[in-house]
Length: 210
Image (cartoon, rainbow, N blue to C red; front, top):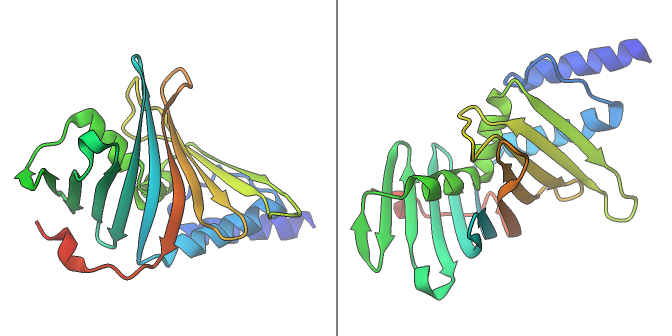
C-alpha cells in the first residue's frame, strides 16, 4: 500500500510539472487534485458572474462583475453594479491593458484595483499556484454534495496587503466557488465568489482587441 501511494505521488508530480516535490497527498486528495488539474489544464476559455467583496480600513465595497477569459492571457472584466461604476470594462491582452469608462478609453488602472482584479481570475490563480513553492491542498468530503477542495498558495509577488490566496473548488462540478486573498496578518483582503461559471464558453476574440 505504501509503495502504491508513493508511486501515485511521484506520478502526480511528473504529470503536474509545475508542482513542487514537497507536496504530500492522501489517496483521496491525490484523486481529486488530479481531476482538478486535468480539468483546468484543458480549459480553453471561461465566462463567469462574480461578486467581488473588497475589504479595507474604511469598510468594504461589493461589486458584481462579468469575466470573460480566453487562452494566451486574454481577459475582460465588466462591472455590472453598483451604478456609480457600472459599465467600466478592463481588457487585458498579454501585457497590454485597456480600461473603458463611460465609453472612453483610458490606459491606466489604479494599482490596487488592478492587483485585486488580476487575482480574481481563475486562470491567474492556477498560474500562481503551480509556480509557487508553498502550496497546500485540503479536501472536505460530503456524501450528499460531494464536498469541496481548498487550494492555498503563497503569492510570488508579496506585499503587506497580499500574502496568500486560496481557491475553493466544488468536488462534483469542479467549478470554482470562490477565490480569497489574505494580507500578512491573515486578514481577508478580498473574496471573489463565482455565482455562475461557464467552462469553455464560446467567446468572440474581438472583445480582447486593444
